Amino acid sequence: LPRMQRGLPQKRHIKDVKHIIAVSSAKGGVGKSTIAVNLALSFARLGHRTGILDTDIFGPSIPTLLNLSGEPRLSDNNQLLPLSNYGLQSMSMGYLIPASSPIAWRGLMVQKALQQLLHEVQWSPLDILILDLPPGTGDVQLTIVQQLHLSGSIIVSTPQDLSLIDAIKGIELFKKTDVPILGLVCNMSNFTCPGCGGSHPVFGDMEKIRRVCEERDIRLLGEIPLDARICADADRGKPTVVAEPDSARARGYSDIAKGV
Ligand code: ADP
Image (cartoon, rainbow, N blue to C red):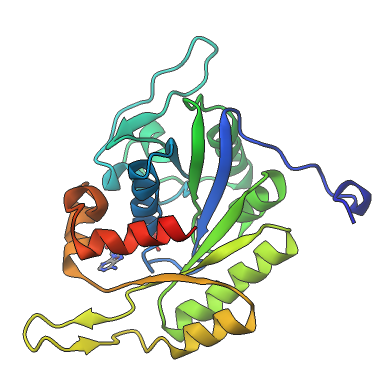
């Protein structure tokens, strides 16, 4: 049944944005923001006009990952103007509130901030806007999936049970709210030891993640290894895709972007 007949609100678009893709993980710390920013940069390198919106209000990572800080300027009609680096437009709560001050907001404040991030940013016209969702399946995620017309979602999980169990919750949320699932990216799939040269599945082997994908008819978009360089690139604000664009590491991300 159409949404209206089911008593659901019509979903909204974001002004000047063609496609919105949400990157979600349900569990924190599995590398969702690192994947989101490297995928966004891959889309930009493929020639798509791309932006990234950090919707993690309590723990924004995008300013650090893109080495950006400072308050956004306002347009003539009082809209926030994105900050850009490496050819990528971006907006984050981290630009609006000093990094050192903890945010202790109740629901209403969070919703207000979220609405501002979603609807009061003047993007230069974009083909793709990547939404870096906060971990979990709480208020912010619900608002986004119910309110926005998303072209699709990408789920990030490690092969570990703890991460997969939460990833499945995320998958169910997208299914319930009619958001197409573009596929799942497995992060930290294995670690190649610089000493012995062997490949080690630190967080478990890929078997379970393949099974979860098969059972739910979800595409496995690709896997990214656990690699100290990916972590170091992220920390210095130059994600792998721009720090070492010709490496196998960067190709891992761009192959996923091409597959989407
Ligand atoms: P999330 O957004 O899920 O909380 P982050 O993207 O912030 O996760 O990543 C968590 C930590 O793991 C960060 O320190 C990040 O640099 C690191 N990390 C992410 N992906 C990888 C990877 N493939 N290899 C090594 N470290 C990674």
